[in-house]
Length: 223
Image (tube, rainbow, N blue to C red):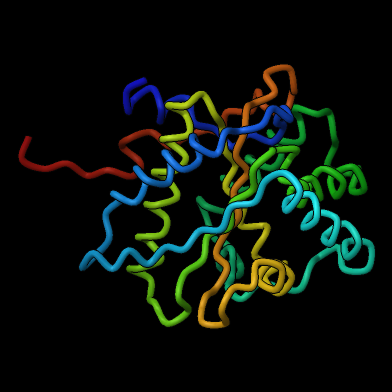
């Protein structure tokens, strides 16, 4: 698989098969992803990986807390800017509408929407869950480095026939995640990520989000 194919076929998978992912595959993905660019070669990323019994133990803790805290513990950062403006507000709205349309959930069916959103906290059935951390003293440039590292992981996963779903939704459980993983306090949870084999028969995996035309975001001069 070449880079173009990996980018074109990458999607946020929201239904996985329970087929295990070999440890050697996860190691190979992370070994290669460490070549991701970072300013000054700081390599500010930290990643924790759960599967099998440790993953099951962790998800059991989350399930026990969800009924009393359906919104989690609050995030340490704004996932989206407050009062999102255009065109970003409309893009986010359409993404949500298109997602729920794949599973025939209407906007009025709030309970069904909440049930689907809660599947984030099961890693959508994926056999592997990853958590990405960054030193809280780092700034926006290093956060962008972490994003490039995550992108590398997602594209490399495609080479191995795997799919992923990056999940900032996990940031609202930062206390519980960090306590379970015994992460030092100087590290901040940025995002989770589901990793595994896509369930090709799941309707929700048919979603392909729109992308703006090149003329909307690129300005080329001198060609």
